[in-house]
Length: 183
Image 1 (cartoon, rainbow, N blue to C red):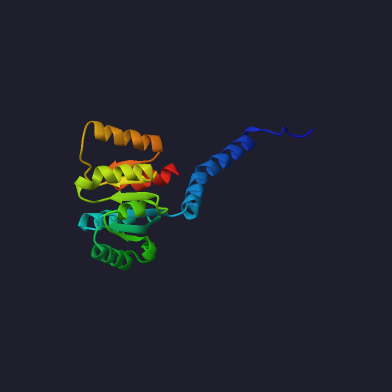
Image 2: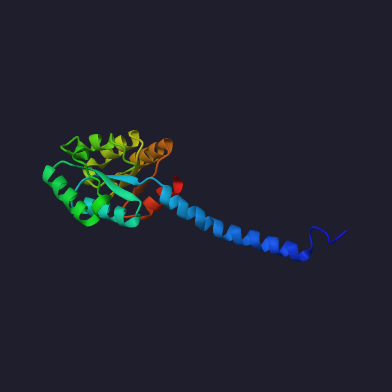
């Protein structure tokens, strides 16, 4: 009749092959995931020194991020920032004129665009209003030096959780990695 279908040698060959495939499979999926993901569009409110530094940090932290929109009270800061980012990051600075906003309400117009993440890098006095509008716009938020404690901070955290978004304060390059993994 012949030998049985399964013997120890055949079992070990099959198990070793399956284990090898399963060990390599996550690498294949990770490479595919990195090549097929859409870029993470980042908008910046506040194009001063720290704001541009935060945008550079975001672009350096993840090659899948692009600078998408800028907002500042002063047009010359926006022009300087757009030029600097275009020189240093080339095609990753996709700053079309229609997404460069100036004026006191520029942050509201920026939040109406299709950005994924907003970097709030304006003086702290403006932060509560900017945070509230960003939460209402349902954006992921990175805010420099959030001030205000107690009830206002708890209210912002509750609003973020309700929106299902992420909010980080201070200098944290891990935000973009967390957002990329959460998609």
